[in-house]
Image (cartoon, rainbow, N blue to C red; front, side):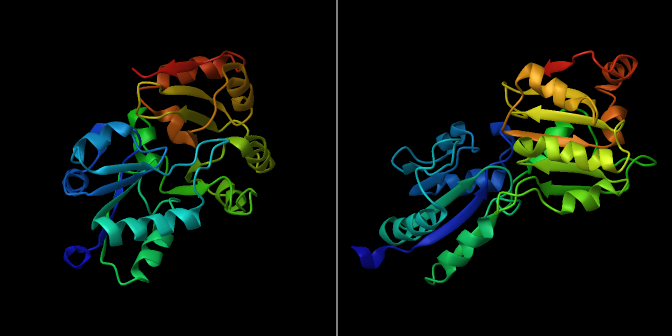
Length: 264
């Protein structure tokens, strides 16, 4: 029986949280899966695209709970492909944006198993867009940085300091535990009045947003218990967002005013 099994692994980007932001190609890949290995940031509603008989295995990492190490996940992908054939590895956002997708693909390919990649909509772009925040805007921002707040060594990325020197919009993923350090870096560059948005659970019904400046954002986070998963957007485009412009003007007139929004 094993001779008829044709192993295949497709890495699928699940998008930022809203299940409707899965790509059509991603849905087609799930529909053909024999096994789906999915992460904590992949919306479980997406499993409905897979056949009912397909195995669905949670391999995500939640705070305080890491059921599988990355090495074990890599091996699970290979073992399931060799045993069951068609495996979909479903990863939140885009699998190649701080998702370790390239590591998984390289490991699978070392066994001679055919691999395919279906890109996903990254939270770095989609989450600000849902809040009306354009990462680039003519006359306001010519570029944007997407940076991990926490490196594999659990340190603040040194790229933050470089980004803070530029006029670019800065999007920080996995940065909530390093918010104090990030604020200090921007303050050192005299960027204390630069607008900041922190968006928790972006594009989902649980979405919550805090808006302030580099100088005020820590207070807003503390008073509203904003936490991971969240992205941090730093730049003039936050204050220039049409959806948030009125709120931001109000905030500028009273830096201690608290502004937190649910999804509109």
